[in-house]
Amino acid sequence: MTDIDSIAAAYDAGVKEEYNRLASNPLFEAEFELITELMQRYIAPGSVVIDVGAGPGRYAEFLLKRNCKVGVVDVSRKSLEAFNKRIKGVFKRNILFSEIACATNLSFIDSNTADAVLLMGPLYHLIYFGERAKAISEAFRILKKGGILFAVFLSTYNHIAQFYEENRFCCSNDADILMKDVATTVKFQGYNVPQYKCLPEIAVHSIEPQGFNTMHIRNLEGIGVKYTENEMIKYFSPEGKRKLLLNLRSTCENPELIGYANQFLYVGKKSFN
Ligand SMILES: C[S@@+](CC[C@H](N)C(=O)[O-])C[C@H]1O[C@@H](n2cnc3c(N)ncnc32)[C@H](O)[C@@H]1O
Image (cartoon, rainbow, N blue to C red; front, top):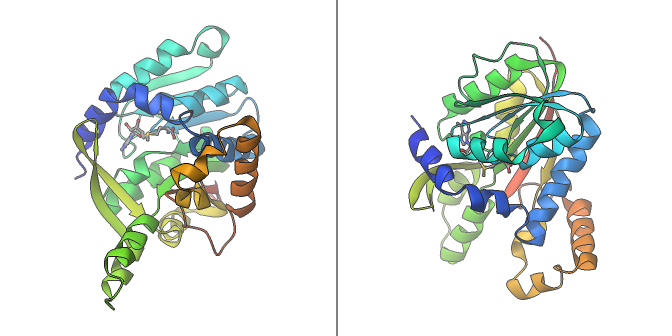
């Protein structure tokens, strides 16, 4: 089983880092834009949204500001505490619940009640296929028919690039294995945090058979993963950020580039009950 305790402990220790992440550089700011512009398109004001793996809740906050009713779930108690402390006044009344729970067991949420579910964390931390399948089936269960799933995955792209760099002169079938998916750990806040990476085709093949129609797959930082620190400098000004977003947006759904990214977003619609 995935070591959920390490995930919870790491994110408990890293609440501030995780909250600041999306404003820490223009690539992460663009990530927020590339995700929220699709939320604006597919999640109507007033919708019921369940954010599973909400962390400190930047996306939940965005949706509350759009008058949505939001339930937040995470394995990290401190992340949820930070979210609840930050959200005040009128928005607080629209928080449906705030629960410490794993994405694989959402039995406290009724079936067919959500207009949208966000799984923007669990699917790249649950390292076993069965656990990811359970998280997706829980999202399917709580969604209404026609409801929308937003899921974020980490791509194996960097593993492939590193593999080729290290094995430039060797011809090996290992690369084919690496390309599909990888379970690994990453050090975060001193903890070994389980991490799962895959190519978009694997993500699609794990979600569609559970009853979803794919609407978008979109690279997040996309081609920006290859920018050097020097190249990034020009994107820190307001005009630079605007250009970067335009660059990323114009390439993020190019079929030939999908997966050429650290992270990609999956958006799909529940097709039956
Ligand atoms: C990198 S943060 C992302 C936070 C937010 N969703 C975002 O996109 O900015 C990943 C979050 O997923 C949570 N998480 C990871 N695995 C989970 C699981 N199996 N069930 C619930 N939450 C989980 C972590 O505790 C963490 O808060």
